[in-house]
Amino acid sequence: MRRKRTDERGFTLVEMLCATLILVLLALVVGTGLRLALRGYHEVTAESETQLLLSTALDALADDLRYARDVVTKADAAGPVLDTYRSDSYGQGAALELDSAKQLLAGGKRVLPPGAYGNGAYEVQDLRVLCTEGGFIIHLTVGEANGSIAASTPEEGVFVRCLNPYKLPTEGEGP
Image (cartoon, rainbow, N blue to C red):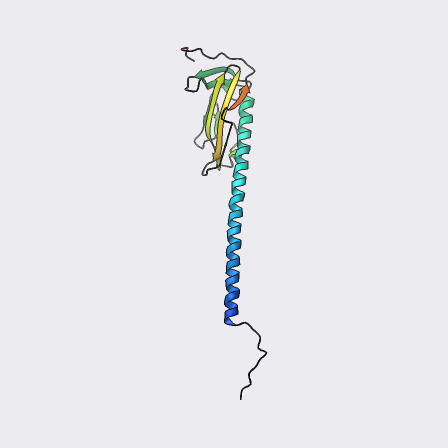
């Protein structure tokens, strides 16, 4: 006859299924938490990068426009807008524009290196330079190339005093 062993060691099928279920639930919680943490990290990094790009671009523009000479304006609904100027860095007839990658150019030359734009991850979304008596008002917006995170100057813009005076055209007078 066979004797029943009472000291058998091991797990029953129900115990194994419960342990597996607990491990699966734990893995789901950890995976979801990790995904949320990575998304938060990306958003914080993108916000920081756009703020840094905005600050760097504004500094570069302000340094150049502060010493602008031979300023030429064109009419716009918001007032006289910068058309061209002479710059020690970018030469005669320098115009502020964006290239095909939406990176800032002055006189056809890059204002910032491609690395400043996260090698294409960030771009200039809006650039306007208004001319006033004694200076310029810069409106600039930068953001993710494929995202919704952006940084911009205050609504009133950033004023840059020009150390070389220029004459604004009067009403009805051409540039």
